[in-house]
Image (cartoon, rainbow, N blue to C red; front, top):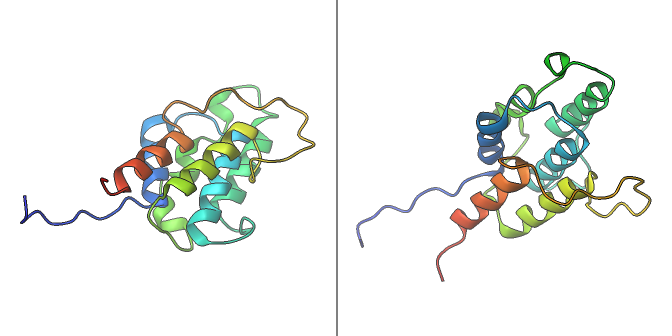
Amino acid sequence: MANEEPRAAITIGEALEVVATIVGNKPIDDSDAAAIQAAEMRATGATSPPIDGIGFQAQSAAMVNARRIYDEEKTTLAEVIGDATEKLESDKPVTVRDAEKVRAAELQGDVDGLESDHTDAPKESVTPGGVAEALATAANINQPPS
């Protein structure tokens, strides 16, 4: 297979768009928002989520969704990250470290995955087909075989 062309690595934005395809109808909650914020920060290299970015949109949606009763009134993952590659200020291939940080954020419901005064207990698992799982899968695909 010497003449096989190298495939392009999967970016964080592309992984987020896969989530929108798989579980896009899921209303955004705090864990989703934290994972999206962490993913955006990893993609852009920022130390905090940009105020006009998808992480901020996700956090705003999660706060509004928490006050809404009916799911059909809530903002979904697809509405925020369906075109993530276009919305991200910059993007990069997913690494194992990116996937670990995003998983921690999703489980804890905060961007750093380490919020010490968080009142809710951390989730025991990530959302099936969600942000953390998509980035983990992309990181595994991107990692060169040893």
